[in-house]
Image (cartoon, rainbow, N blue to C red; front, side, top):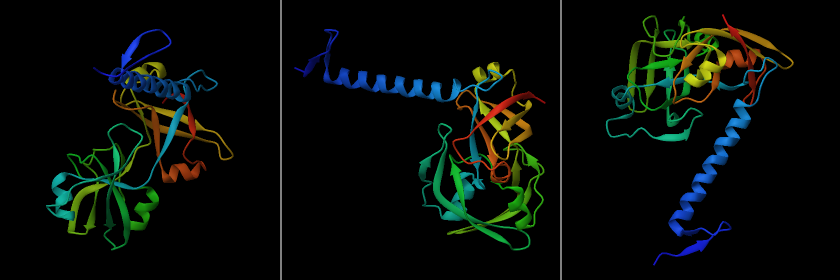
Length: 238
């Protein structure tokens, strides 16, 4: 017979049921904390404040390119999860090399592996590398510029891979209804503080698997003198 215990409401739970109940209650608490910390932090215009994420230079790879750079028998491994569900910083880094043979080492690959190879850099990185990448959305590589990637198992020249990612906001369809925007819209946001800044041309990206968050690269974040744990104010569509 399974062990059981009696709770204050006189219902009797077996151990397995009690564990499930505790897990469910913890999940509800975490969801409530998220709602209170994000959705209920509101700006002066009554709209939710948007958490900020600062995006450093990074790489997305296909499985084929990963194996060319690290070896056929090397597994792609996670190091730590990122803010967006299912995404993670991997254990693997590469050196990126520009046409003037200037290089930036230890550029991290983000997971999961994708259907395209892409290197996201800041404008400062681009100047150092001697390249002129377009400012565009992730995955739009028609006008991307070349770089060479060097790993422990080899090197790969990618003809169209380097971009500067648009400032963008991740949100769900429910968030989009609240802010009155659609996928692909552009908006403007404000960051307060001693170097208060208004950013325009911020792209709206919608996916119901995402959490509400704005992504700025290190150049934009440094210009506004911000760090993580910052919230931005939505000022409306462009």
